[in-house]
Image 1 (tube, rainbow, N blue to C red):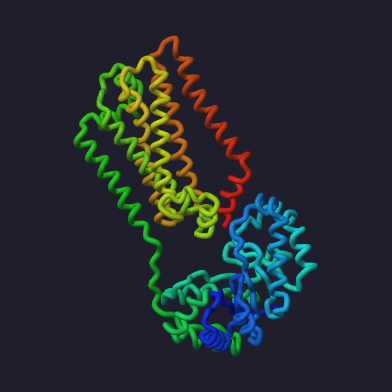
Image 2 (image 1 turned 45 degrees about the vertical axis):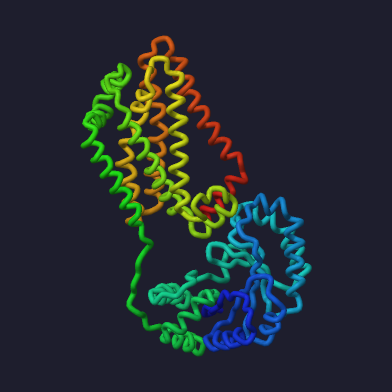
Length: 456
């Protein structure tokens, strides 16, 4: 039989008992049926909840476990879960215990890896067991269909009423039977700030009819103005370089339209300036930071971001946020470019000046202005992930190709040493790149961390 969705709250474990009791009366009057608390819940709160009509869920703090960690820590996990189940055994209104949170529960091997733990707990305890992932709750014995979902805002804004209504109305119309959780802080603020919402909840608790007057929507998406300003700044910088370095514009035209003549000018040291090449490489590092940021922001959710930095805290250069991907991209590019230039220059017997390697290597990075501009445009206008990944991959391929193209150009004036130079540069570069890819894919713990971050 179809059921209407129920309402629940995520409640921070209360300290003041009298205040908690007053809050519980308000929640009960507004039709809240479920309360989730974080383990451990003190005995005073459990005693207070014992005589209330709420169904209680308790969530353990076990976030971001990969399948490898679950397999390796089965004994310890079973011991911890068992002790927790025993703690709540006598509280009959504690209906379920959340064992995992945003972990790799959708991995093909999860069911086999976790079943010994679940089987032991089921014999030992009278509770249901669940996990939380992607803002949904799933029973461990039915892990494909959620029994609850979350409206995730923690601070109330009037525009939230519109989005809440859109999501909750859908569940009501579908008779989904889901438990619809909100944060207790959000609910407290909503009831006080928007009395019409309070009235709608009261009516829904009486007759299961959902209708709420909507305030004027003041939707404002996440601002990416800094990225647009940075992109404009890079274009302005290029224009200034064209103005102050007269050779740079001919360099651009010859690199793409008369590449052989461009290479001859560099190899015969007719083009000596290094400023343009260094500037292009510096801007390439900034473009790389933008690309890293966009790829991370497009493919990793906030929960995935927390999971990533949980396992890779050293990469949180400026905090556990997307900005760290930007900084990491800039720093990584600067290091890789430095290595690439030394790799190109040191074995090249026909190059007398370091500026020759710089100019040959940097020319390809004129393409950054095209690829990165398209990528930023796709990102800020909300195009699909497929397009963003496509142009992100194109950016990386151009970067990868810059080394091989410049190595081939340098080898033109080497005579008998050409084959050895190409082997030391293009050959070794290709072998090393393939080797790093293979090493990455055989490193299952690392692969699982990235899979977990992307899938959350």
